[in-house]
Image 1: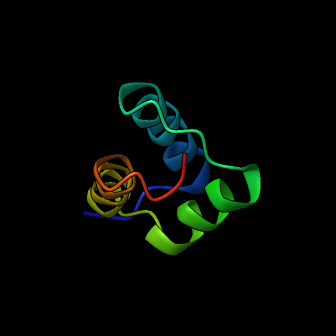
Image 2 (image 1 turned 135 degrees about the horizontal axis):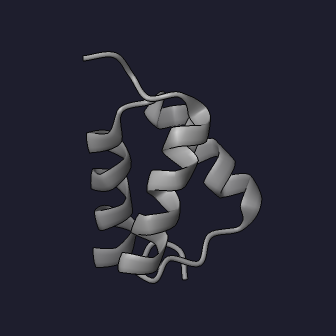
Length: 57
């Protein structure tokens, strides 16, 4: 399976953001998209970790 394009990752992140009520600054959102590099599973896992551990509120 090919990695998602950045625009697709942003759409997926938008849904995860609503689901987990994440409130990241824009620069951290961009970093999260870049670091996960098109892997939707990593993007979801990172969102869960941020939410569960309240790393950034």
